[in-house]
Image 1 (spheres, rainbow, N blue to C red):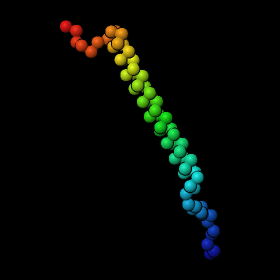
Image 2: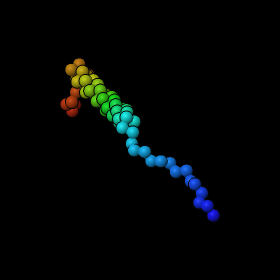
Image 3: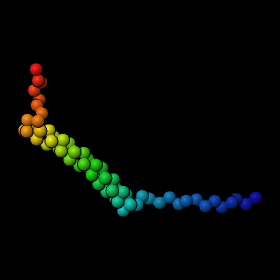
Length: 63
């Protein structure tokens, strides 16, 4: 009985350009999310100090 030929996928090395593009895209996405988080925290802090300056809120416990 003759052996059947099976088509095997030839393994190629990693594509450097493809990995660079994927890494760049993931890095930009993660950096964008981090920057949005940072801007949100800055906005909250700025709002707190603005309200504190306008005497609308106080950090002293009212007795």
